[in-house]
Image 1 (cartoon, rainbow, N blue to C red):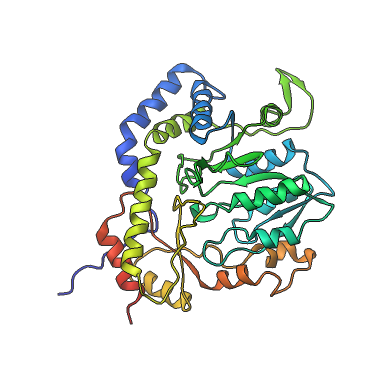
Image 2 (cartoon, rainbow, N blue to C red):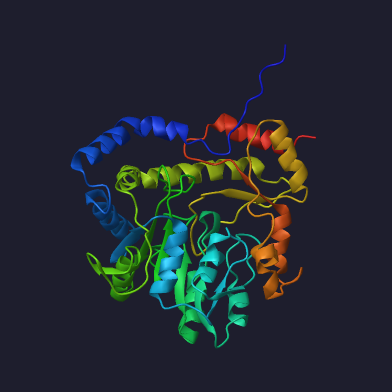
Length: 369
């Protein structure tokens, strides 16, 4: 009789919940008893704790990571007629936010080994319409912000960091989110720091940006029932802030757990016919995802699926070739590095506490046959 197949989930959030359950449910009860559900004490405390952790003066919480991008662009005065340079190799929300404020996304190519923006490509695309750059710290890997900052300084451009997948990642001795005019984080449950619903936050050292964000997230209000501009209803729930405060206390351990899984993969996959994710010389990787490159990616993914092992295609079609951007007249070959990555990249299971037996199973099945 054959033994049962060992299934490996792409992401396991249930173990973490079981560890947090008692404290989390107590936080819900305490919130209910307080009667403060919107912009309450947990939100205020969480904003202060995030600002301290990231190393900035201000943190303004919002409803989700997409709103963080949109409101940041608005607060920086980006709008119709402006161009914003960003990556084609990211989740659609990054460029969508540019469109939402009426600006035009301009896509630069990426590095092949870590999927972050290639500064040389960015520099070649700057025009008199360019007003900002959105570097994406993709999969938990920080962008080369030293080079991006040089370009921004030379052309008087704003920088909005997309940190959605990279909480706790670093560039030198600074955390991502502290390196631009605004840093945008998502707390979607699958992220390095995730809540049990939607949530986001914006970090900044700029007093003017923080003040503007506080208005924008709350209907453009300057005081109760007093409105100076058209804003948004984009507020982090008090209950989500409560669970994020609990999880923030142990975030460094969680990231260390991800890094340990990444190291285990690297050890087991060394010498195999694939490209492993690069640990860049300029910073520390948070490993929100562990993304490898394989010539026979689709066959490998099917083999994993046949053996009940989860994986993800992030991202199977770069943004510049998506239907929504057909009017921008990009063609296949416009951004060859991103396009090639989209045919080879495969994200393997990774999460804090992932059993070594599961890591072994993934690596075994990946190269069967």
